[in-house]
Amino acid sequence: MRNMICILTLCISLGSAVTVRAEGDLLRINYADSYPPLSYGQHDSVKGVLPALMDAILVQKMGYTAVHTGKAWKRAQEEVWKGYADLLITSSTPERAQYSYQSRQPVFTLSFRPFTKVNSPASKALQTTLDISTLSQFRFCDVHGNQWGEQFYKKHNIDFHVTRSFETCLRLLSVGRTDIVVHSDHILSEIIKKNGWQDQIKPHPQVMAESPKFYLLLSKQSKYNRALLAEFDLTVERMRHDGSYHHLLRKLNIDYGVSVAAN
Image (cartoon, rainbow, N blue to C red; front, side, top):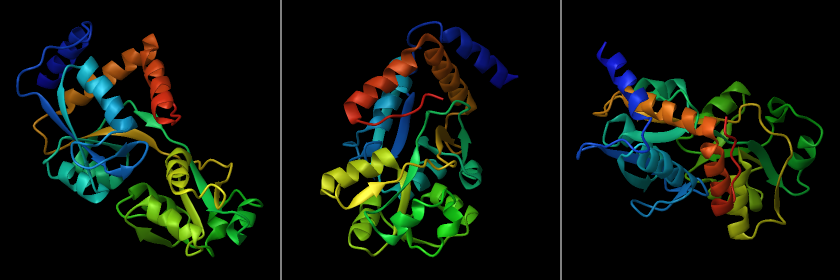
């Protein structure tokens, strides 16, 4: 009953531009510190699409105060699971559901594609098949703590090498020490451009059916309850309806050179 009253109150409060918050309503949000253009930069210097998006919704629309912190991805997650931080924006997995509550509204959908070295055997193989499961003879690379990758490769029965960052994966790819990297075309293209690998590494056109939707995850150890996520869902739903959410994503596309789907 108490949660129902809270949700009804949220519906009423969303009629105003910004809800007045108590002094202690501080949200601690963790991000990966090496995931450009979504998030990059350590500690309070973190910036990118996700911090900008959360600032626009949670701070400007919902009236919270937020502390945005960039950390190594494994640590960023662990701090949320243990309640040292409140929120994380990432894909949904059964393991993450043990430690967090998930928003109903996705923040966005990110297109994942395979990247290979130009004219490599893996590149040629990808030109003849759309079934990634038939490519298990090649060496795949992913990032430690990326549960999307763990589920993806388990589903396709593929072994893969783990590194700390996708930049390391792409560096290994550039020197022929791995064969295929599957991840966001926008994120990998940013790293490739930064390192001058445009002539060596190319994406393939097929988009993985498993391309993830990113959700707002709230720690079960946080002082906040699921009413926060209900308010977030109502806010995003309202923004989608009045067009401001699409306008926000278009602005982020211009600012950070990333295209995200508003579904």
